[in-house]
Length: 411
Image 1 (cartoon, helix red, strand yellow):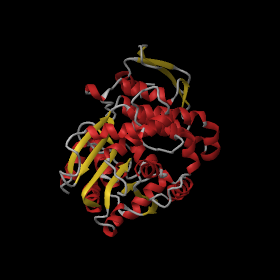
Image 2 (tube, rainbow, N blue to C red):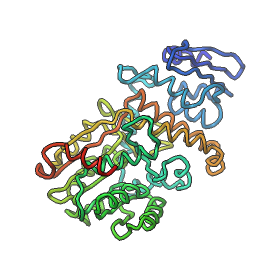
Image 3 (cartoon, rainbow, N blue to C red):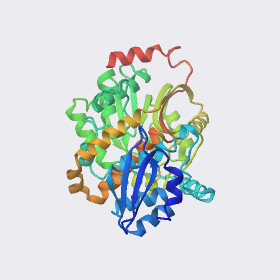
Image 4 (cartoon, rainbow, N blue to C red):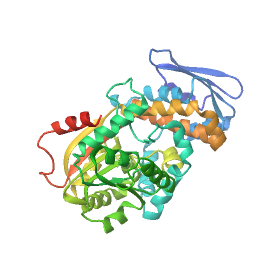
């Protein structure tokens, strides 16, 4: 127990964590407190305990995935919540699980890992999105929106919140019939199909996922919009070379996180080149509060290889080089936390199907991912940004009133 005591006694103040060692001895950290869970974990081996000491984030994930750490009271969501809620980003707290050398190494690894050339980008996308559409159907909403929903009311269903998200974004695009719209990172096609229905526009959705492409095309045909909605397997950089100046509007939801810090300038240059002179773009991305940072080892290894969550400062600095005008910025602070908790609940509800499909270790890895992400949006330094860009200062109305009017009409 002595190897874990220094870290846990420093972090766990409110709420209670009971740790049971392989020899049956136990120790309690923290004190019960309203709003903080009480959790009990049991270690099957000293190896599992050592892994956490050597690398608290990756070590804890792999100890949990490999069954070396089992949760006897509570679940993985509550365990990570307990750790994060005791170290809230808003109040300047940190887990302090890495020293200066470890932080520097993570920074370097993140920058190297996110040099996403075309072939590597496709492989990284396949790692996460080509594991099977059947898995995603089990925990996403009916439209398979795999990004932060929008919650005007907390009592909405996930389906309602995702519909609200699409209407919220569509309103910011200032759509008009006949416009040509590009959806960069179109997922399973839900946004593209919705835009075509809402505003009678033509949409091209692009993806690097074979699984997403096939299903998106099926869905467009079933929705009766295949004549106005096309999908293509192509990198945004290649499309910019082929389709310069073609699109009146660009939307990108949940894709910028995969671009990599090394390619921010390239992304905005390509986007500017793809738009008409009066073009408008709406970028919806997970964002880092505060200054630029690094991607943790668990996420790099298991979830989003090549991914990086950008700070608002580095996102805007990159866009400025292509003379894109930032016309509107909205920060969604807790919306993704609400979304992730819905995904987590649906994942637990379909445990048997997911285990049969992917195995026990994958299920534990997936729940660790969703729980860690939830904690990052509830207590850590993550949020979502919706950033509207225009190529011309004359491209949009003088005030924001048009957004609310369009959103109400779409809903």
